[in-house]
Image (tube, rainbow, N blue to C red; front, side, top):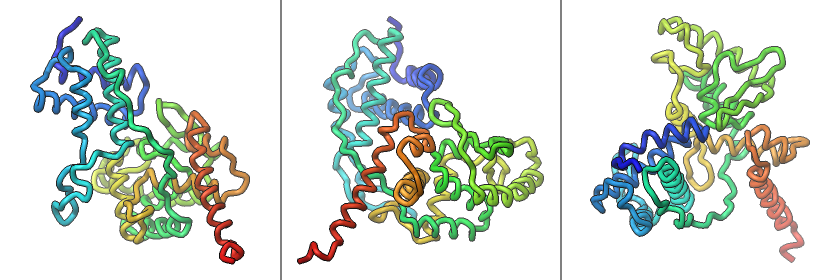
Length: 327
């Protein structure tokens, strides 16, 4: 058995997720940060740097320490967190537990430790939540607000692709200028596990793309970066926009549009993805679960069934609105 300090195992574990398990970059980074959090806690609170010294009890105590911070940073400065001291959301804890389980399973497989002390750790039960999404009217406001920005031609195309195709932010970031196939009118998306899917592009997307292409070309010429393949580039450097860059753009557009998701929740690319799916399922014509699953890149159509609950909720509201209900 190879004896190494835990912190030296994090990078090879992350590479294993990317190469051997074919995890998406975002998923691997999330697992990486979860394991880093555990390793830092073990060293600081338990004075443990060797994996063989970690017990199930240590992991249980660590999971109990996963609480919201006393303060949170805002644009106007630091202020008290409304959930300070409370356990993190079940979904967050479940994700961290999943990362820890994978880490120990990997460590045993590659002989960095003899026993898997994480196998008996149970994840919190998760209720099937209806995804937060925007209304049709708010989605229209987002498009209008995007188009009115200084970088409106680019940002309108970004918003339109999110709302019409329901792509993930990692998928949108990875789109290249040659990802579009003019012959059959499709856009090739690289999804989770580097799996490709071809999505049909609509006349609206084509118009937005045609308007953006000359703007993009002009930026690349100014920045002397004609070889850049990325579709969405920064105006300042002429380089591929990052995931965080896209997230900030969507947040700014939502703020300008005066749009929030649900109860004062900020609008994210993932919520635009949910918005696309929800509007398609509730308002679209001849949309079924299998077709929606294919569009969203869900391997298991059962994952997509969450949107049928949105529809049932609407049906419940319709039935409850019957005037006879009040008699």
